[in-house]
Length: 526
Image (cartoon, rainbow, N blue to C red; front, side, top):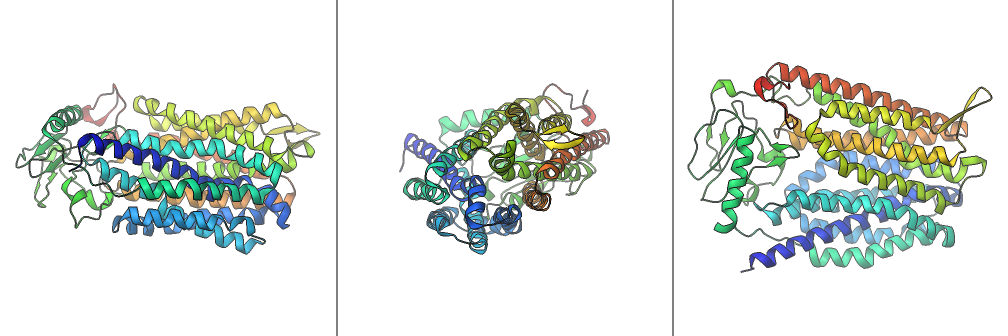
């Protein structure tokens, strides 16, 4: 039997390999094509609206197949599907340099989207979470995995832009695919394999149980083992039979109010789906491995909105995500084209223009790391509104007023100011809108996550397409960037509506995650 130390080393080797593979995969199938839009357009004789279509299709495929792909991953071996998808993506990537028309690009980008759905973040998270089992460290592992994409977003545009400036877009895109094939595929085959969790030993179980009990007590919850089914005043119970250690399934800000049986995550008949393992607890009761339940007293019931998916607060949050995505994908898809072709009348060299996109992604990375502590202490809705105002301010730097007309700036200083402020604004709202999902509890969390992603992909597709169409119709990006800046008004309004809806729900005695230092009495903040 594998030792605990060796199992731990293999777990973290898997996490490191997954982070690198995730970065290489994204660079080959999305970041490189997005960086090379302008030279590809010039070489293939396409309009701006036409060259943007492959990325629009990429997001639409993600939006349409997101839920079915998740169901397939839940009901099969994610490691096998992941390896097959990574190999398929690496081989398909070699075809990108040979594309000579728009239909070929559309088909290829659609296939790229499928490989990302089945061989991307979701499959890796399922594989890694299984290897950790009841042990702590999954939060750190998730951060490491997500950091891979962020660093790819920082490095890939500069690398691809420099290669394109010297060798052309075909060599640049081919180089990224070869790198993925040579590095990413072997890493996947060697390290990204199913690693069943080891049972916790007594020396590990005691601290874990103690820590979990302390955490649950802090949020008025309880953890039980075996036949211990004592009712608690409030909060959710998570029960595991067989004398094993029980572990709270935690969100960003603490334990969830729904009750989850850990055994169901590892039983052979389990789907492994978050949605299938959570259940609405009308009285914040306990669900055990045998399907028995115990209901707490009526006074511990959840919010009036508990069990409802589309609550006013969640609808406001979806509006925040959709408005952000519209603006975000106008900028991420078209900023390079603007800088390469329109900026200052003649445009910048691609390698120089790509540095602005790299700087934007780097600023977003550091912002995402810094937002976490803020989300723990302050109202997320008000924070999103504040970042939304910053997004409005950032958008102003893209424009000048000349001769009584609104024109795009030709100042590198203003573009740099836009990049810096926009990175903070979009990353702040993106991180907070993701963290806010935990405020609704674990019941329906998987479905809400999917709906958020559908809104993200669908609205982003619309934004990118509209920007390309406006650029083709008017010969300038002025109105495209006006639309992107205006969508921040929607972010601010929806964020304030979210904050208000959460306060109304709290005033009705509803469930609300509270920032550190706030009172839980009657569900209201002080």
